[in-house]
Image (cartoon, rainbow, N blue to C red):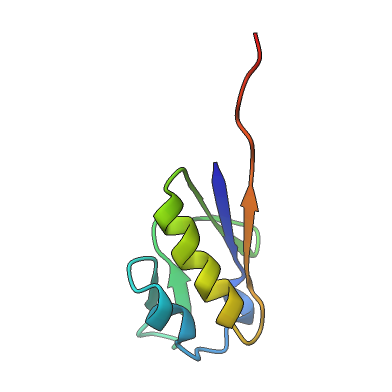
Length: 82
């Protein structure tokens, strides 16, 4: 499982994440900051959990080019031993 974490409060609205991953990020018309689509807000973070490797790769590109480094990616191994 892949977890994408996004700190929207620190977003500067540069639009790089949207250009690199338009299926996963959108710009808010109210405050000019981007947001992570289909995410859940937990405290100051927006969290998206997915098993889709394509989503992970596109968000990885966005995290690499983000000038304020507010996009973090994690991998959790979910295999269960019996």
